[in-house]
Image (cartoon, rainbow, N blue to C red; front, side, top):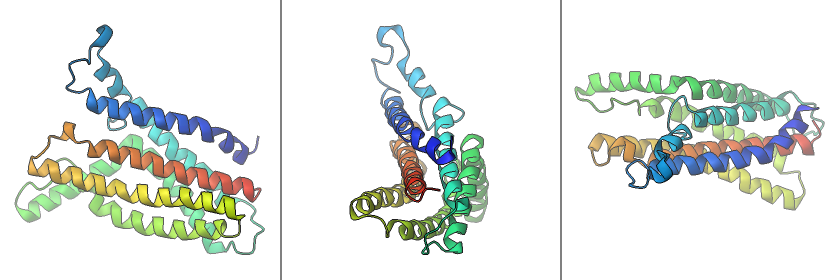
Length: 240
């Protein structure tokens, strides 16, 4: 079976799993102090915690990593596929290859939590410079990664647009909706993280009560799924 065919078959199951883990993440948030979290003799909060995308080394974290890996594979098809359309330049192909490699690295980071370790180190540097504890929980990773991610996402959006433009109007409009969803959701990850860091630092809301982190995880998986979907559709349309 060709890789593009396999990815096409995975699109719907991944969508259902994405909805499932988004729901369980919000249920984990809403049941943490609920009186009915032991309904039918079960600790529902503990069950939902295992399926919470905010929790490290959980089943949900594995799924988030899988979404990134699927995105990496879909852009591998675009980056190394045999394009015959004249508007696809070597630079566009390079962008797709770098996206594939970047998504693969992020997939591993999703499990390993390297960005959080970096965030804590950056937080230590900021705390020492400011002579006060501005960030002790690793929120500062956005200072390092947000500018890089936004530049890369802008180039990727430009490259994908070049593939979308020649398509039939109906399909083109549908893919534009998916693309803009990705371009809105992925940058909003940094916005929700920044809000969480601000409220936590100000002591306004305890970290476990921050719904912003649920919105962050939702934006992340939805945005990456949209990129996966676009690349998969492109691979089928261009018969790579």
